[in-house]
Image (cartoon, rainbow, N blue to C red; front, side):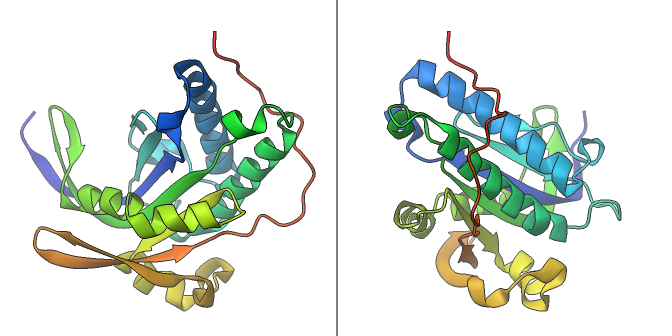
Length: 214
């Protein structure tokens, strides 16, 4: 395949907290739950997978690239997708038996970005994917999740903040996004805004498919 691009994509990446401290069999369970909750949240948010590239597995996380289409505006990644994912995570954790919670609870970091990518025989790549992953892995985002009682910490790129968040699309509240990340990609300084989604009061969700490692 000849080099294809640039191709504009919305970029979503998720990464599980403390994955390296879990045993392999626990990781089997957590990875299955990650995909289960991801697909549920995408369906609820109307993120039709017909408009997404194949989900890229990253071991303890995933990378989702959404094609530009009127049917899936970028604002849906911020709302309702992120609040729904946070709600599902909280429900999953609340349903865990007390004895299992320390080892099996799910907490994660998320990044939403947008930019141009390239495609070759091996897949999609480019500086904008690099930027998204750098934002996701930033110490400030890891620290925000450690300090939060909520199960999810979101970081959005400057492009997403300026195009969507500050305008309050989908009822977003810009005051709950805080610029706390600075990275450098290809010699350019990039900034990220951190947001901790509220999960509200909810009962444990008892309908989850608890998939045990075998």
